[in-house]
Image: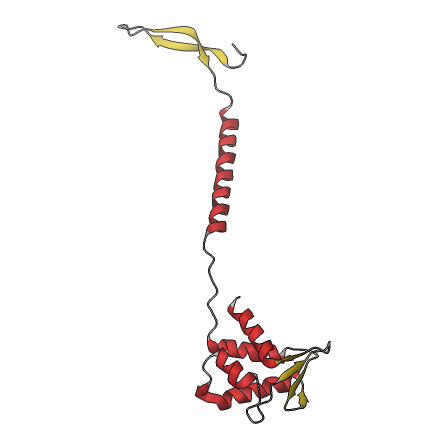
Length: 163
């Protein structure tokens, strides 16, 4: 027998048929300190709960931010033009800064009225070419690279739709 596992304890027994109690010593198995056992069990429960929460957080469907309306997408596209620093906008052979280009796009959008309902229609009808000359709008970046405004706006629209 291992030491500390069994212990002699006083035991009161009742003889059968008699009201007298006898005192004797009996050998009982003694469990290790319950405090330590409960602490270990509690740690295990906390750890299991933390793992379960982490699992559910990782597998729960992500709440998708509400998608932007077409009006909001158009506003964001115009703002992306206004935010370009160091870029020059070329319209009908003339150069304009970002703010002037954004103002021109806003004006074209207002004049288009009901013909422009979606962001795609805005790019096609207002943001890609001059309606008078048919020439495409271009953007010359600070590094000298030139791109049509349609390519720029479609790339920004794709970013907006896949956020």
